[in-house]
Structures are given as C-alpha cells and as structure tokens.
Image (cartoon, rainbow over all chains, first blue to last red; front, side, top):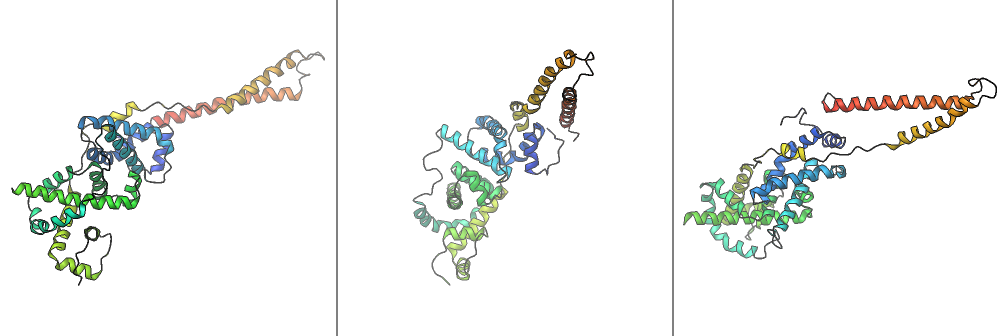
Amino acid sequence: MSLPFPHNIPDKHLVDRVLNGDKQAFALIIQQTEALVAQMVYKMIPRAEDRKDLVQDIYLKVYKNLSGFRHQSKLSTWIGQITYNACISYLRAKQLLLPGYGAPDENGETRDANDAVATDETDSRIFQKQRAALVQQAMEKLSPIHRTLITLYHQEEMSYQEISVITSLPEGTVKSYLFRARKSLKENLLLNYKKEEL
Amino acid sequence: MITEHVSEQDIQSWVLKETALTEAAVLHIQTCASCHAKMNMYEALFSSVEEMPKPSFDFDVVELVMPQLPVKKKKINLVPAILSGLLVLAGLIGLPFLLFDDKNGSGLQSVSPWLFGMVGIVAITFIMISVSEMYARYRQQLKELNFE
C-alpha cells in the first residue's frame, strides 16, 4: 500500500495526526516500524502461524494506547516495548519461557575455561566455512530473549539504553545478558563447527 | 606485559569499541594466542551477525491491521450545545413578553431592549454554530482527501 506521505515526518506530528483521526498516518507508523517488529517477532515466536495474529494484536494495542505515549523515547522504541511484552506474554502462555530464561548461566565460567583450548585451534578456520549458515544455526540455539537482544544491538544498532526501555530491564542487566548471549553464540558456533567436522 | 588473560567481557567490549583497555592488556591480546583467537572470533562473529539477512513478514501488515482499527468515537463538545440550549430557552421565555405584553397598543414599541437583545443573541449564536460546524466538516473532508 503506497501512502501519500513523506517518510521523514517527526514522531510527534504523526502521533498527533493519528489521535486526530487520521488513519493514514497510522498506516505510515506501521510501515516505519514493521521491520523492527518483524525482527523481534521472528526472533521470539517460533510458530509461523502465530506471528500474524500476534502482529495484529501488537499494532491494535499500539493504536489503542497511542494517546498514552509521552514521547519520552522514540516511537519505534515504544512500539518495540509493546512488541517485546506481547512476545513475552505469548511465550509465557505457551509455556515456552522457562524460569530464569535469559539469566546468566551459572556454569558459564567453567565451560569457558574448557572451551578456551578448543577455541585456539578452531577459531581461525571456522569463518572460512559457511560462516553465515553456521552463525544462523548458532543463533537459533539461543534463547528467544538472548536472540532478541543480539538482534536489537547488532542488527538494529540500538543502544543499551534503548534496549533497556524495550525490555524494561536495567541497563546493567541488559549489558550482562548481552555479554552472556554473545558468549553463548560463540560457544554454539564452535559446537556447530565441531559437528560439521565429524 | 600482563600474563593474566584478559577477561572475555573486556575482549567483547574492546572489539565493540565500547571500552578502552590498558596498553598492557592490548599488548597481551596481541601476543597471547588464546586471547588473540577470542578477539578474532568475536570480530568475525559480530560482522556475521550484522550481515545476517533481516526477516520480513510474508503478509502485508498495513492491510492486515487497518481494517481492524476500532472507530474512534468523536468527543462531543457539550459547551456550545448547553450554551445554545440556554439561549433558546431564554428566547422562548422572552418571546411571549414580546408578543403579548401589549399594554400600550403596540407590541413592538413595548419591546424592552433587554428582550430584543436576547433574541438577537440567540439568532447570532445559531448562525455562528452553523458556520463553525460547516467549517469543521470542510476541514475534515480536506483531511480525508489529503489535500492539507
């Protein structure tokens, strides 16, 4: 659907237009934010058939609550927050969110020490072998929350502060989770590589 | 040069250019095979993640959502309605005085300026409300056509 609007309208103007009953402005909001919503939904929702309903719910929630948006963050960050909460609720309802999901792994340090030697030997060769596919596989093994954090930081180039707003986690916790997520990603990648070698 | 390995958290942060390491730590990373391998690993990993294709929905989100949007009920501003109601009431009360208070033989001559003014206000108010509604409707139509 093409829209008769320029794509650089400030958030406040767009929100005001929607609140004044201009539905075309809301369509533009959807167009401007659906890439971020897609990133998060694809990273957190495993069942493809549930994504459509969830996306619809997310944007209806955005529309309904738009009058409560106080412009304390970017509109996309606020919509990201709604998306994150909707995905977490979905995962909880489907019991896919295990207790302590995304929390630091207690055995992480031990595993790290054991992997250090293997890392030396294989690191330089890993990235010559179907790197993209292996990284993709390694990403899929991460928890939904870790996957989302990695995506927001490394692909969407969001700051820790923005991720903190989206996830409602303290900034320090976001940093700690991200450190753990990157480390898990690296370890998954090494495991994938070893499996490929066998 | 330090002999202790640099922590993995510091290596990550250094690769991401978030924190600066001491010269000794940097020297260690450059000379220690283990730390150097970790640094290379993270560099390659981060660039791979950045280059990963971004997902997109296989359906049109705008077309999916727009028909589902609830119709927002327009807030009716009751102030003009109450005001005009009061004025109409005042006009209705004043009208019998105008028509039937014929003590001096001429209805119109016996009209007090007070009553005359009230009737005038009612008429002007009605005209103003009508014009303002017409203008609002015109603005709304323009907005719908995106001419603004």
